[in-house]
Length: 372
Image (cartoon, rainbow, N blue to C red; front, side, top):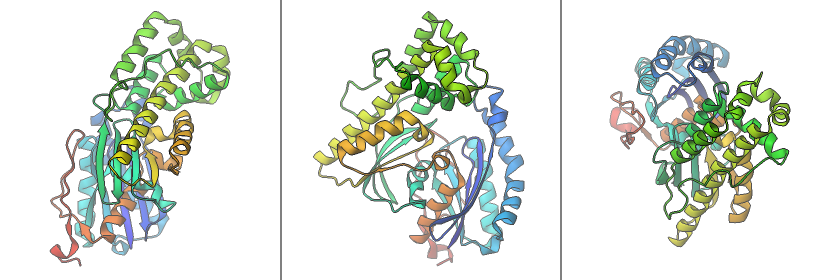
């Protein structure tokens, strides 16, 4: 079974090709340079760039991967959540391709695809406790199987990745700033510049599994207001992450802030994840592994803290490789493959679902529309 995946939920135009559950080829076109001028993703520009890029990217991808639409068993597309204009470009393209080639269409939940992505490289041990941590979402799931996700907790305002990006923007770090902030934090931690009491752990003094990072973001803003020299140090960075270690020694206050902020976010994520595991155990639910995915899963301190947590919980930790942490077509293709292999697909009336709306379980049996 050969399945094409199309990803256009935010600012990455990406394609992936999966055959019988294994990645064959992938391609991605980033819009980072376009949005860097504005310090963040501009939705209108993102959708226009997807529209401009997707067709030529697909033509080049067919040639490189050596396939034709008639070779495909199905086409999968990220239907949401995401930026509506961006999603519509990918969904419309996928519908046209499915209709023209006479193959099934699968609408993929972008969030679940992130957590299933490690299955491209290893067999997932399910049921699992999953943490999706990205620029737009911070969710905890109980993953019973590939088609059964139960949401346990979510962010009430800013997602963890959004907090990283906004703090980086406050500092004047180049977009996307999360990676640069992480590099500075790692250098600061290595030099012993980490203050675990600089910021309070956000929304942790409760018993639920939800997150809130807006208060932490405000705390950083107030700290910078009282310490403007840190912003001057950050803006003096010549080339960002490439010189983080050197800049850490030259700007100790900056590296301390980055390391302390990084620790605060990572500790909070791990604390809630541990709480979720304890609650599932109390409810008699089986958990065989920890799966963590999304762009922030590439964060060095978080990966280290998660490894320690997994050992404490006596559960294997499953982390995707770095290229599968960010938005990509491979994870969409793989999620689509799993859906098709289970005998389900979508009608061409499939809708794109923007951020803030629940994605319906509206797939149908393949044989209901003549593609058994």
